[in-house]
Amino acid sequence: MKKIIAELKQLVDFKDKTESGDIILIAAKEPQMFIYAYVVKIERDTTRKDEWWHLHLKMLSIPLQEMTWTLRTPQMIGQEIFTMGGEERFIKAIDLACDAKLPNSPNPEVKNGPKGLRRVK
Image 1 (cartoon, rainbow, N blue to C red):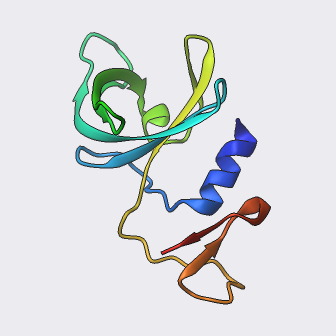
Image 2 (image 1 turned 90 degrees about the vertical axis):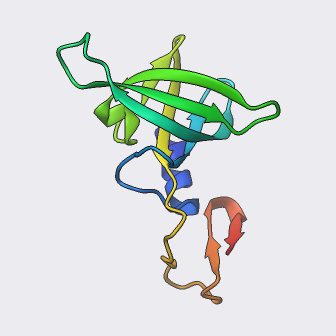
């Protein structure tokens, strides 16, 4: 999973925190999948001593699916891999306003990714 996340970080501009209204990328190792979700609302889980949050999501799939995940802060902001049903998961908010460019790119509008993948802005 760490290798997958490292490759994603080369392809996607991520934010350092997650807020209501963000689009997040969810990555799963088994089965390997990537899906986007919209963060509808974030609420503190007051039943727990530590910082746990109810992350209300709309999965951007057909049909749209609503779900709520309860995560700790490091899990919610992409600092920590976590498991659901024994399978590893990772989420992190996408920075849709980022204009960062990779060095050595022949075209400043193109970001080169691992294994010959590239993203055109």
